[in-house]
Image 1: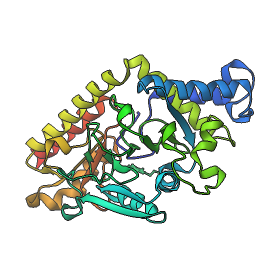
Image 2: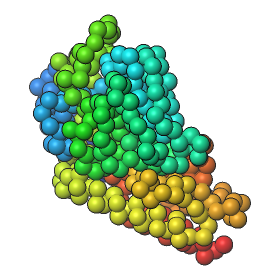
Image 3: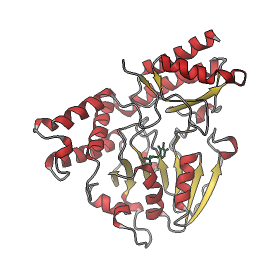
Image 4: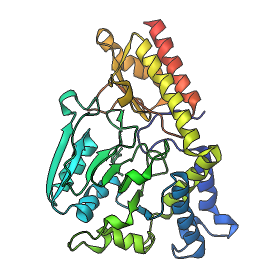
Length: 356
Ligand SMILES: *Cc1c(COP(=O)(O)O)cnc(C)c1O
């Protein structure tokens, strides 16, 4: 029996993605060769590369003047590539969790960093509001979904300076107004494919605003000019991401996906709010992540925590133990997680409540 997979990343993928990738690893498009053993310069692979970039543009309705890149080094290398390419004097960052802090650390190698607001005072359990973005910053960096803490900026915010977003764990979970962003990046292993690739959606004209020597592989221009084929890409991962995007399109695109995601999240948050054993770690409804749902045991039932984990495991649930920096539980309910799995978790919580 297939498990209910609540892993935070790498995480659940559509069965379509896994099957189609497996088939094409054995025999790509019936050509008698594996996806693993063809040149990335072959016409077969360049077609995959082109289609994956085009599909990202189609699903997110990316306006002209932007490029889509698939690079290696994960989101973590983007923490460094973003300031390397864009930070001349000063950048502004919103500190909403561990990933934001890591991005800030890298930016400091390249210039001044203004942290405009932080939610560290309450263990990142909310999204700061009412901050002001300095108009002389080279860019403003946000983390749209805080995978560890379960908070999310679910709107496309306005910024007086180029807006840069780490959208590792909520990319393609909803339609986005890409025109509001100068750059959106993330690892694909949360909501799109297996690990090995970072996607970058970049407005071409934000580059080259100041003089700096940038090593070839770390220069966005290299990858824009060569359409992500400057060097050998992670071919299997890009192929798998394309399969997930085809699945998304088939499903009705990002509007349809958003509707399903909102329903799944509501189902789970409603139960957390109702069930006497549990409390949500994020109180503010508008800050709650639709992708990573974090909750802890109610004070009076703390001793039941490991018992609940065991009970959930016995019901086929995987990956609901919370990150060590929050504790309790985290259910990652990415695009590919079926509503039935959320329902199964809710039923498990109800049953556990009735036993205790
Ligand atoms: C997982 C994650 C990262 C790190 O991604 P890597 O590809 O492992 O470098 C960065 N930011 C966010 C929001 C994440 O969820």
